[in-house]
Image (cartoon, rainbow, N blue to C red; front, top):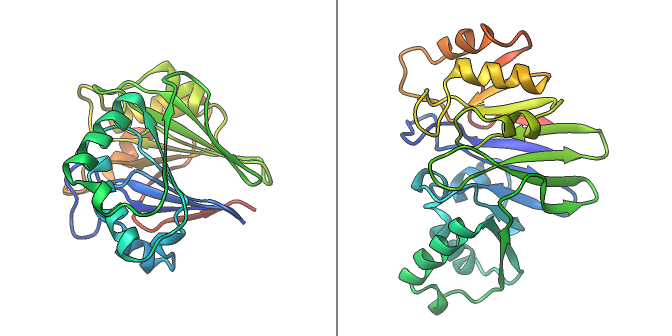
Length: 251
C-alpha cells in the first residue's frame, strides 16, 4: 500500500531530534524523495529503505535547507553502485541552479548512471508524475524564490495529502489542499515568504482540509506545541505537530 514517511520536520535550523523538512513517498513502483537538505542515507536506512531504491527526487525550491544534500546523495548513489535511472524534478529556476551546483562539484567525473532532469511548469495543476497508485501535481506558492507546493493523490483509497513547502498565505494553497485529508503546512513564522501557525490554520480552513499537520516549524522553541493551539484558533479540525519519522498509510 502507498505510504508517506516524514523524514524531517524542522525549519532551516535543525536540532538533534529534527532534521530539515523532507519526506518520502513509497508506492508499488516509485519511491519519491521530496527535497533533500542534508544527506538522507542514514534516515532512509533507519526506515529500511536503500538509497538506490529511490526513483525520483522532487525539489520544491532552491534554498539550502531544501536541496543542498542533492549532490551528496547523487554521489553516494554512485558509490553504492547505482545503475538505474534517477528522475530529478524542479522549476526552471531550481533546476538551472542545481545544474550549476552539480557542475561546480564536477559531477560528470563520477555520474555514471542516467539522471533525467525534468523541468516543471510554474503553473497550477502541473503534473509531476503519475503511477498506478500515486499521482503528484504541483502548484506555485508564495515564497521569495520560485517554489512549488505538492498535492499527493492516492487513487486506490481516494486519499489526498497536500504539502505547501515554504510559503506565505496564498489562494493557491487553498486550491492545492482543497478537500485534502491531510494538509502539511509550514509554520516557520509570519515573515516574507513564510507563514505562522495561525495563518496555516486559516489556510486549512479555507481549503476545507480534514486535518492540519504543522511542519517546517522552529524546533528550537521552548514549547513547539504552542503552535498547535495557535493554529486551532482558526481551524476547527484536528491539528498535529508533525514529528520526524511519522508514517501515513493509504489503503
